[in-house]
Image 1 (cartoon, helix red, strand yellow):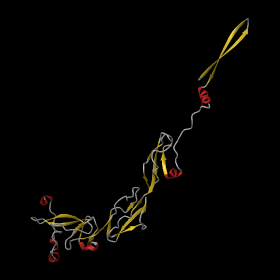
Image 2 (image 1 turned 135 degrees about the horizontal axis):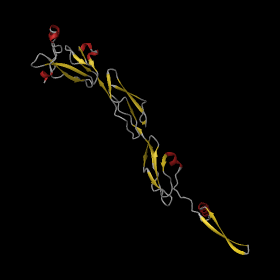
Image 3 (image 1 turned 60 degrees about the horizontal axis):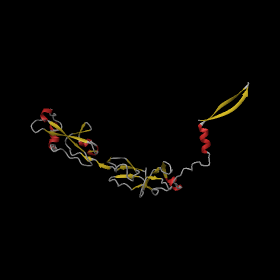
Image 4 (image 1 turned 90 degrees about the vertical axis):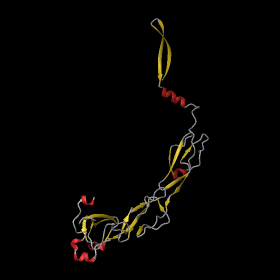
Length: 255
């Protein structure tokens, strides 16, 4: 705030006096007047940004001298060059402006015993999805869908189409899905990939059986080493004596 003193002489009543008045001016008004003087500061200087740069990139920061900006490409493109630049005192940029290069994914590998559900292309855009299906009797092991990522790779490796397994038993019951069944009662006598099959083995010293579990993996299912396939005569003449039909061993016997 600025104070101005005003002095006035006054006469009357047989004497002479001096009248003093104080006038206040807000500082903001004073500064405004000063700023409007011919010696006002020069305009802020900046570095030029071409239209093609503005339209290509998302830019953070401003182009004022002494400051930096950061570039980022739009989705589906990769920046080539420095992603940061500095506006120098001579109103030029420290580095050349970068460029945005379109990113693509190469076609993923084919899946044996399966299908790739997508338009056939030599390259796929970022965000493009590819779906997979398996042929009949094969089970999909892995992702049903993969997506082209911004780094030019697929979101996951392609899946596998795994084959079913033939149950390596004919004249002995096995356990599949918690149910004790004859193999010929199972469709095609086969189980899908990843399915557990429980076989029955005879205890070497006791008249009882114990379970041995095997897992189907891509068309391969081996019986456990302890399993013995009954003969045709055993199956026909003494079905109640088959290992799968005799009493289960108590835990102490198995140990």
